[in-house]
Length: 330
Image 1 (cartoon, rainbow, N blue to C red):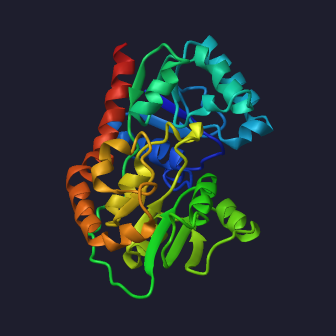
Image 2: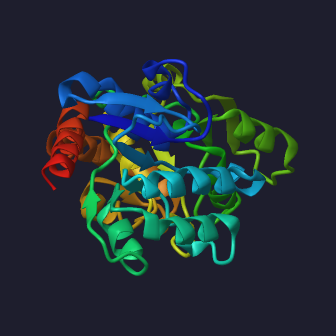
């Protein structure tokens, strides 16, 4: 069986998908590409659909939807539908929350062409069910690193925190840092993000107190692992009222646990099942979390034992294998 993953850009090699800065590509298309021989499939990816593909997986179209990619992809998918190709949508964000946007319209137009859908979380499945009555399968994002043993923080003048994420998450971080009632401690904050995120932080005027010291660098997997060794904890602020975040996967939380870092985070729907292992970032000021950091080191150890192990790459790859095998049977 030949699988083509419809994602933005062109990929010269299968390995390129697993190196993408976009988690929706790296953790999904990249994972399947990595395990293609085990799953016994041929794999290709990019904007231009391989005409020999038996199955087309529609990945995240991204903001280039506004630049005409929506029309290009719709033409490809309409043609594939006419030729009875199996079309699967990998729905990784709550795109339908963006009412009347090109992204919303694109997904609304392609849903009738698709045969099945895949989502990374149970909550996103419920959100998609409002618009989609065909079969929806949950396949989680994998954790990309081996677990690092949590360490007891070395207290100096400031505790070191790590924040990592795509530029689209930076407004949530800035809002939290500017909330002086919640973010009330002396901290060093290492920020790892993409090029757009670095530009945003460099050009936007941010009113931060002198108690917060920033260190901003580009996100790479290795940079994140290296930074975790010198940080004491991880911040994951979000916005519980933002519909775009309502279907987010648990991956950033699981990754923080794997990095061996105690976590303070918003209790998003996908984070809620693991709430016993992390601090509620809205429930108490950051200074309270810091005072209880040793407790959350122990909670991180428990999370590694009870949670992180369920998101291993080879186990998630088996779920993709099962999904594709069922496509053949059906």
